[in-house]
Image 1: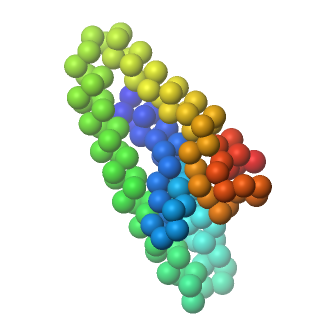
Image 2: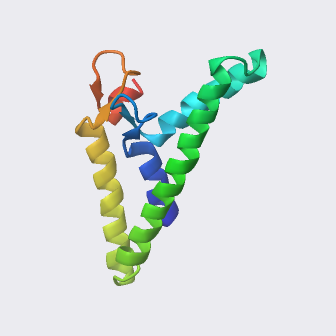
Length: 127
């Protein structure tokens, strides 16, 4: 269950992009941008800002990934594992459903990558 919660956090939890302008996006968005830059580096080289941006994005992915894995691990260890098996499973499933619903409906992301407005939900980011 730790891994499921970890991957849901990667897909949903808004975190600052470079910490400069208040942009909040899920870690998977950093991964998409880093992957795009990796392809560009493979084709064109890492000169100029491309290499710097790639390293910054990759650093964000690794650091935020470790933090979110720690959060998922602590939640499973401190909450889910202390409950009876069936109850713990339902608490974890409820947490996952709540995270996905919140990200899909509440619009917690503040991103320059969205095409119509700055505040977006998970569904709007990938439209």
